[in-house]
Length: 81
Ligand SMILES: [Zn+2]
Image 1 (tube, rainbow, N blue to C red):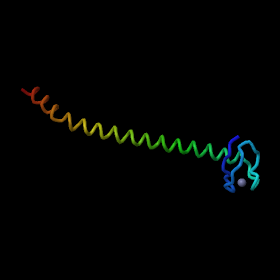
Image 2: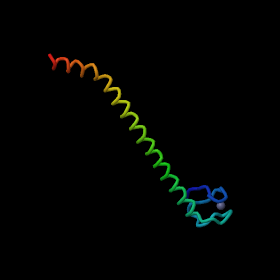
Image 3: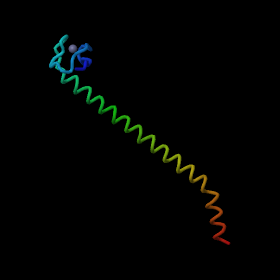
Image 4: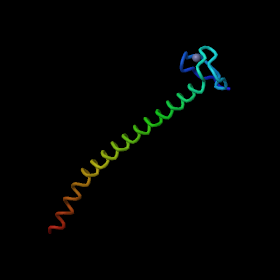
């Protein structure tokens, strides 16, 4: 038996109870809201992770282009001779 916070009054209610003992709000609504919030939180974190990965990918490619530029120039010089 776990205590959860009622979304209506903020009171502590048992997740086994059907309704909040203080305001009568259905506990299932609180649980569903909690699950939805957790899902949204997961989506936001996934989005941030994707953005972070893209930034790293772009930075890495820019760095590689800079690092490879002298090598490419050398390679082109060797080919022209
Ligand atoms: Zn309540």
